[in-house]
Length: 257
Image 1: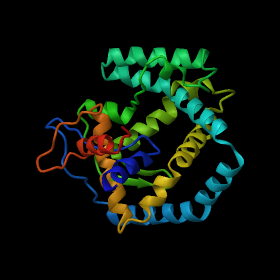
Image 2: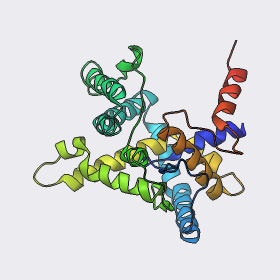
Image 3: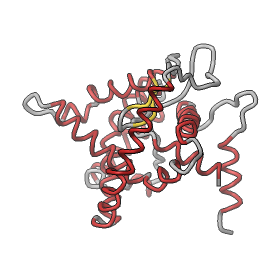
Image 4: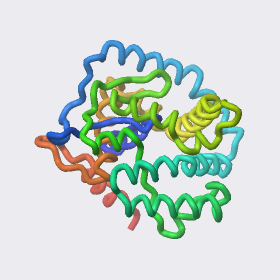
């Protein structure tokens, strides 16, 4: 159960954030020189989440049935596809870029604007790329670990990546009308963050039960982001337990026969 929680909580990354690569190979620790400030922001986020956001999520889930909620999630994921495509190209992953483009076209047309994930039925596997990952493949290291107000775990590199996404995402720019680009991007970012928060409601509740949720979230965030940067196949680190192999073993044991 611990391994499943470790990896699941890594998904709380609401900004598309975390981990490590540099010209000399992957970093093996999380740099957290701002820990006192980060802990204060984490405590604020947790308090706001428990007192305001979590109750709102509970009401939302009670009022809105699961199919419409899933439809919103599908649409938001589809709107991120052009940005995924751009970062596929920037990382010279042309085969993956072709899959991203095909997935976007199919889901936007047959899937009615992304409302339905038709691509999955066609065997087009989903993957995510962002500018933080792109910077990592270009040799930029993590920089210091950062906890953002409301948004949660990040680092200097990935905060830069998120800011780039906010201002240069092609969908956001297409939504711009009469110079209100920032307004459109803010609304879309808020909806996206809300949708992700709804999806991971139970996971966050488990996180808050940990003895030190700050350290727990920081560690898993780094592990999860490293996994994403290496497209699910990170090189082993010396002395590091391979959590992802453990997860596969756990899934094999738990899967119904």
